[in-house]
Length: 367
Ligand code: F0G
Image 1 (cartoon, rainbow, N blue to C red):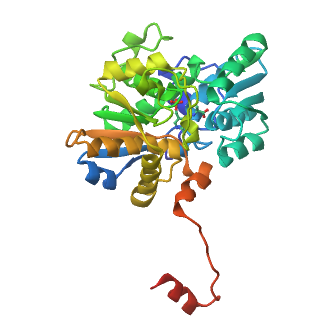
Image 2: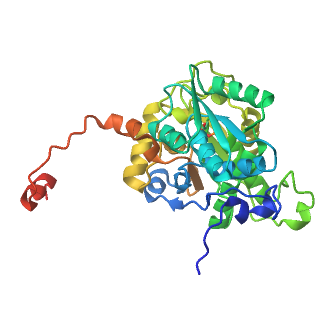
Image 3: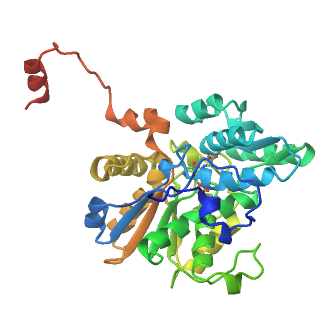
């Protein structure tokens, strides 16, 4: 029988801080498609793949880190998990809390969560609190909350989150046979770029997983090199590019509307150690890249995810993409989560009904 993907803990347990006997909460996350993009390859002169993280159970990469973080909660007495979120973390936390039999509380910036993500948290029965503030305010609240109450924090400052998210790098190396030359990601709270870097370093045998003492003898290197890490923030939410926190971040890519990334130092280390860079792209570039990816590659992603594609195209236009380089762009979340933002630039959509005849359909389609 064909192998059925078991979820990231089961698939990579020898490289994660879990023992075989530990409880595991999984919705079979991971194992996502790595899709070759002919259109992007032709446009950039490189060999470009997209890692489609919108194919995870709740439609974003957050599930990789939620299986690990929430499985660990089952080893404690905590019965409630909590997170701040721009939408995807809350959707994922809410779903995995259900699977674990835990309660979930989410603290969200009021009016800045895409409808699909809000629907997910509601349908999974999370307790929602909307804050008159941005993500950074929400994260401050939830950090204090989890310090004073028996509530487990499942934002990416929880180290088990990055442990799970690093498995995306493992999958890419397993599929390509080695690390790519360049890896491109959107950057918000900066957890994911940090996790990918950790994964690439561990898989190349350059570092060993913190929790595994005898790993040097037990784990063989699977990659011969590590990629350059390129990160892209939204133009008016680009603290890592400007070098200081932003008070009032703004972007229609609400998932990365963040002014003070929690994993700041890790992200800078990933950038500098890998010889990469972190730059920013405008909302217009993001929407254009989102449209191009949907229309030319067949992958519909949410706006924040398209920041990686926008960054690739911008860097290519500046003549800075090495000819023939193998490049992976992570597209972090599913386009169906936020159809309103995707459709807004398309103008008024009106479908005047036609008569229910083949002739009318042929005429309407200009065939
Ligand atoms: N793309 C999407 C779709 C996201 O939801 C996020 C973050 C990012 C990119 C950036 O990843 O924070 O690790 O740098 N979303 C978080 C949330 C903040 O609450 O869902 P990062």
